[in-house]
Length: 561
Image (cartoon, rainbow, N blue to C red; front, side):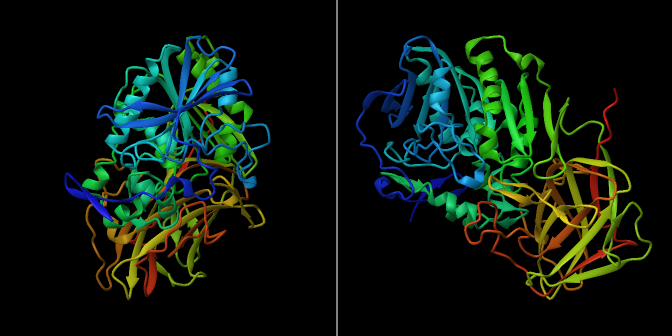
């Protein structure tokens, strides 16, 4: 293990692993430049692109073979997962259908066969220190943003381009778009981030101050293939449990983004991309920006024909100067869900929705219910946080059709008996009229997930008052405040955004637990996992009387005609 000095912290690096040994990847092609034509594509492999310090990274360039020199706009897909990792399929549960992507498609990236057929060039880059590119790999941060900037400007100067570069892609390919767009490369003409977190601490590494132990180490291992050194992301996460200089080095000035942006989020990426994609759109200064929030499986939604048609309309306008239907797009387009596969799409003007009526539903600890009136007397509910069956459950049955769309807040008065801290996990669920749990799309694979999730370590309960709102608490995470014996404290837990329609007779359920509530497919979950917990003794929730424990829900009435 090696370290690199940075202002205020030591960045933990490690020696790279031979790129040719990467499991679950196609064979790594030789490093030499190569050019060929295949299935209508002119493909240049391992084109060396110089960075401002002289380091050279390698990119693959795809152009239409029948018109390779016709002032082509460029779509750039930037990720460390290997530009050679091409496939026309994804895992069967993802919902991606045969024919939606060609065998030239890199992971979570645009499909060259589709885009080249419509008069574009597509470029896949191996960033600095990734695979066979020179240098040491840094996981995001200003250095990677500057490298992406340099790549965009170098590509835009090629003789066969029209000088306009766009970016599109899912997850990592979306997050780098926020970063480089904030640096304003002159030839970056438009971005299409498709589900990418924007707050490294709160959305990727520590949910409510509780370290994420599933995706982070697996994602860190995916970045270890290099001829140089690579940032050891998992080790750095462990070394920085509070919000400090390390996390500040990952911050993106989202308000500096002014390029046209078509931003796509989902309700289903609870614990990774949902919150940050929406927050990025809200913060952007772009005069031309659109937000779309769906409730589907993310990879299937990116590659489905209707989505590619919308991407094409967006880029045709801003990269080719064509008049397309984007003039008729609403600023916000959301899917209101009834279940995993029942949903309705609706146009909106803003986010959060201005007509939202935030209403408290008060917890009744004695009855296990939620209601509009606070119980007059205080009561408590206890559970064992170390028992998989231990939990607190509160239900509210709707007397009339009710739509809940937006962020929610769960305020609890809590006590830890026999411990000085407590980890709180919250899930919102929908019950049908018979009391059965209704499933929703969860991440890229599952259709039995929750409405929304939230987390909080009680010692991290201090709020960032400048950023918090009554319906969306934001915690500072800069210090810990342990619990004292017998102490009852208020905590405010952010529930990530969602949109759900409840019909009369259907119910909203709140589940509070001391561990992950959704635990399918262990040990290789493709979603957030938390195993480094502080729970002990007994968790106690107080509600009623002086303890105003409640769920603040965003009731959305029909829009006036």
